[in-house]
Amino acid sequence: MVENCDKQKDFAYLVENHSGRIVSGQGGQNVKKDDKNRVTVEIYGQPYKIVGNAPIDHMKTVARYVDDKMEEIAKINPSLDTAKLAVLSAVNIADEYLRLKKEYEELISHMKKGEWQ
Image (cartoon, rainbow, N blue to C red; front, side):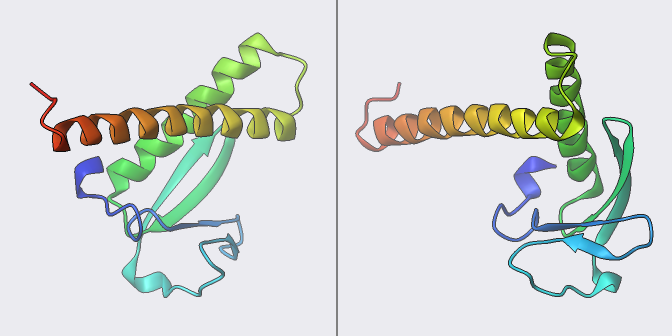
């Protein structure tokens, strides 16, 4: 799953709308559809087809995490519309990521200095 996922390549994914047209991707690059994993997920009640090199289980896990975060925030702020809920969820997920990244970098630094036991 995650350990098999190259952050730079494998999780560069595309989301297709209901007609199959690509609506977003990484760097505006065109990707051949025939060499990618595909999975349809539901996030906050809406279906999304995710296409990418990442393992399908990983893509489902990521989608489930986003859905859970949106549901969590919606319970706290029930008056938010979906767009604001999505942005607030993205901000919260980015905050979690950046805090964990900093912690990881500090641990690596301690290990390199021989401070890790």
